[in-house]
Length: 95
Image 1 (cartoon, rainbow, N blue to C red):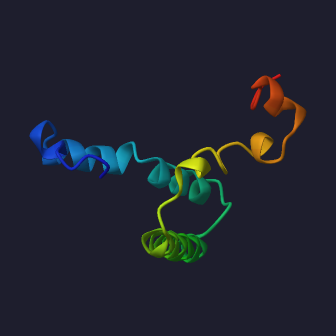
Image 2: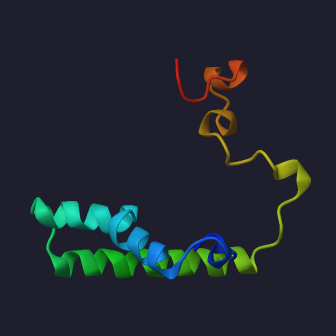
């Protein structure tokens, strides 16, 4: 849950309904299974790997020093970090 105050305006039934029917990961899993792209075992392996990667990322972030003010725009846009022509005119995504 991204919103710690969700209980103030969402019923437990609504939260469960959204988890079951609108959660993008649940929907993507159902699509992949239904279309035969993966089986349940493969999904569980991928899910476990993703959770391990996320936990490692959290540990890394918790242990890292806060960024310096001068670094606030680093690693935001590949074009800027690599000084491409697009970075000079502010067109980072579309032409």
